[in-house]
Amino acid sequence: MSATATATAIVFPLSPEVTERLVRAALEEDRAFDDVTTLTVVPASARARADMVARSPGVIAGLPLAARVFEILDGESRCDALVGDGARISANDAVLEIRGTARAVLSAERVALNFAQRLSGIATLTARFVDAVRGTRAKILDTRKTTPGLRALEKYAVLCGGGTNHRADLAAAVLIKDNHLEAVGGDVALAVRRAREGAREGIQIEVECDTREQVGRAIEAGADVILLDNMTPAEMAVCVEMINGEAIAEASGGITLGTVRAVAESGVDWISVGALTHSVPALDLGLDFRPLES
Image (cartoon, rainbow, N blue to C red):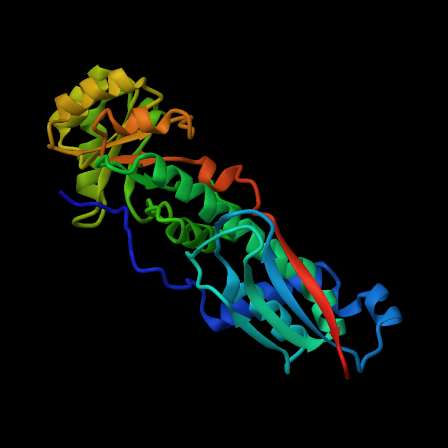
């Protein structure tokens, strides 16, 4: 059977050109080039060193993006990553060292931290889910519940945390959800047949199921993936037996760190968790600033 979900090598997903545009847009949003506090208080000749430091343990992600923030404000600044994206860090660990003009360090601080804290928060939460299901067959997947314009970065952060990417966008795979079924009178076989006939050859077809009856119809229709939506672990276990390896079994719907182990022990292959990206807390990172002699 085919599978769209991918656990690939962790490679920063943005080209230098796209990274440049994104970082400049964030700096412009913050008016970092017109930082009235820094420009009026700090001499242009002043230089500084700063360390980006973890205030709490977690998994780091987004350091290439954070470094580029400082480099754009000061073309002669030097940024050295002290760990790689995907590294597990402890409280008080330094993760990025910056040397440059004091003005650039101070004006870039918030934008750099915003990127790193957000992405590291996603990586950290993902790692907690991955740890919670360790020893089972289940993989932890993300969803399309991402910040508009930042999906590639947020899915990259999931990889940094040891998770697996689900479909990247609406063109990547067929996912027939409840509203799609409503549009065709609830006919699972018809929906799957139309997808097979109309989509490109080899595309993965997934069907969302709320009941055992729907699961049975999805199996008969030849779905590649059957999404068990908002079921209890006990109901999932019954459905996994029904599927019996004929399709990938995916669990979804309000799954938390408190419930994910039980879901994994039902025997499902995939567990998709929207919370990895739609409501994740930022990892607590700070910038320790030290002036240097000019």
